[in-house]
Image 1: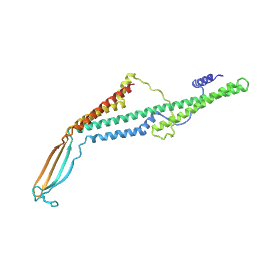
Image 2: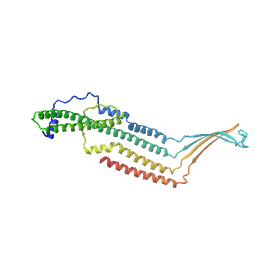
Image 3: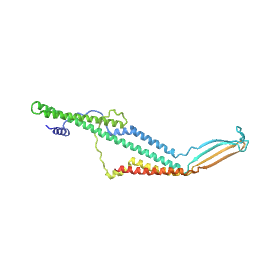
Image 4: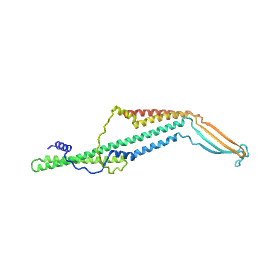
Length: 333
């Protein structure tokens, strides 16, 4: 009796419909239910969603006008500590409102930068979801394979034990050799080792799955249901086009390029002067009230200091463009 013949006979017996051992009545777990649980509970996904929400809330802040200032002002003619309001023509008191007004286009550009940052965060969140789902599917398929392999090995082991008993009986009656018995025992021992390996794979894959869905790694998981390979109805060229159009990593890089373009525009607008508008009304007792209004402009006197910001923004734009092209090639590879 040869080892290869024993193994071949055993596997043929399994796949040709011989009776098999009863399967465990353990609860089953489907890939679809695990995916839904991962999307709801995975810490990485929840973190990315919160970052996207935070970036979305900051969009309106970036393009908001500065808060106005209101102040109380007293102008007094005479000694300090004495009030001459209503007595002296130049003595008065009242309120002043001041508003800083950025040069037209600055706030909208800042808003566009924040909008692109929010879009990047959304793409990063989508990338995290796809990454977790991909890891989960791989772990589930490995978990299923370990279960399936163990079951086949267990069934094969039972058949080998039967062959071992036959070899022992034949040897005891003088119809077989001791070598046949030893070979059968060796095959059973090797199958036990392989079963132990599959048990370890089951445990490690179950721990990975539990971690991906936000459970305790040692929590019971259940039996995987049968999985079947999905059909791929598109060609390789079509898949490449779809990847370029929908890859969250690539789209995030594209949003980074667009953000850098707005940042370059914003750095150039730093040369343009902002203005401050103020208005006030003052009382002078029985004398007529006085009102005041003013418009002041910042003078970009030290304009050469802003040139470094423009050069830095232009370098960042070039860097983000190269980064996008590199990611595009990686996506197609």
